[in-house]
Length: 116
Image (tube, rainbow, N blue to C red; front, side):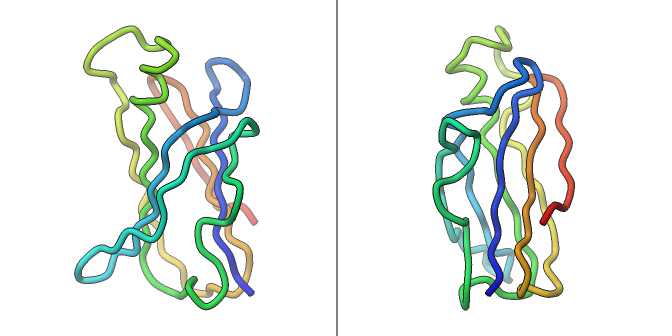
């Protein structure tokens, strides 16, 4: 049974990023929001973003609300923030394994990778 998970690490503090809003969209002809969650104290979501029969092959997009996160910590100190919403668009060819898409975040840059 496949599932999709994520976590967010704040590289500017070296700590998990707590209370980052994340949206998961299925990018069909008409995009459909599948989940909207907040990260916990470990920078993770309490449950998978999608799993089981609801997780199918196709195109997806995660949207991380980084600007709101940094505003709440007064970390960036500028308006508008350099990074506000960070979309990560990705494809899933096989939805049977566990797919993990993390975000490594700072006020001025980010990176991601395919984890498991």
